[in-house]
Image 1: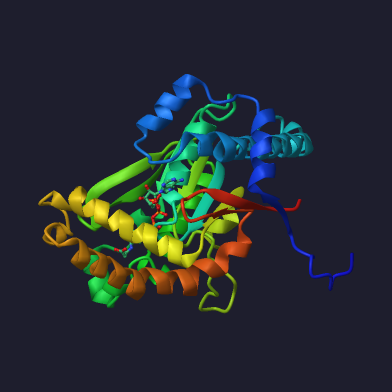
Image 2 (image 1 turned 180 degrees about the vertical axis):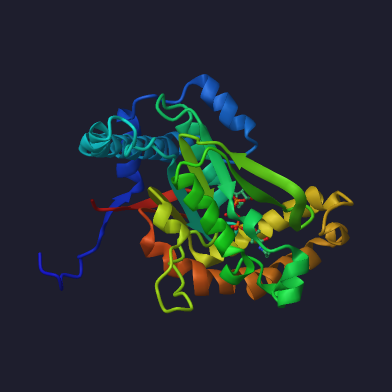
Length: 327
Ligand SMILES: Nc1ncnc2c1ncn2[C@@H]1O[C@H](COP(=O)(O)OP(=O)(O)O)[C@@H](O)[C@H]1O
Ligand SMILES: CC(C)(COP(=O)(O)O)[C@@H](O)C(=O)NCCC(=O)O
């Protein structure tokens, strides 16, 4: 095949039928206990979809985890003469660090749902019982800081995050730090929760989910290329769908929040709980068009080709196609 061949791509493409056939040969099929637990997650996800799409995906991830484990072992063996030379005083070997998976994609495409499902499924594999989840919204600047920077209408854009703190967090996890802490964001108050934090203690797998996790590094002021969180990923997933479908999911979620979470007087959106259907659709469409769609087009979509796996959904969240990076 020549390099000008139109078919020349770094991805292997699998349609839904081929992918779901892999479920048959996936060890550890779902048990009725798993089904009960997954249903208890409160997701509206179809369990057939879990069995046909997400279960084989968890197997693929499990193979990558195993592959990284073997590479770690081989590297330890390679470095072991150095520890022997120093009479065991200097240990050049290092403990294996958590396997980090990035999950990227638009607002409302289903990143959190995918990440939560993967957490459940991965934890069933004997070599990865401890799976933790981090959402990057904890690294958004507080509303007060966003106001100060004139970024309140740009929440979710790369500049609305404390990118240095996020990078330090992921870098510490991949450096083998015993305990790493991250701030917490509340969708209810629409702000960072003062004093709250999540603590990550050397899990087997860490899933880092967020709009911009596949962004490349920004050039530094001294002109040198810095690092990006994606430099620390062992695997990354981009959840993709047509923009009009994602817009519909955003509006649907907004409508169900209006009758659910927005009814809580603590909610930032409480004042919208009494909107009529039409008013709520107009407001959600306005937020989508002014913030989330421009961010998708300008910042999120351009990172899709950087993922290890692109998962493309149809209008009902049904996964239709997988693009897997060739090795
Ligand atoms: N696989 C799925 N099947 C059915 N509904 C889904 C699925 N994934 C997400 N959703 C729904 O789509 C909306 C957006 O999903 P969510 O995971 O919150 O997106 P994100 O984290 O990307 O903003 C939610 O209402 C969620 O219930
Ligand atoms: C909190 C978010 C920026 C997503 O953050 P992420 O966890 O992807 O970093 C997003 O869900 C959001 O609230 N965007 C602001 C515009 C809106 O209200 O939809």
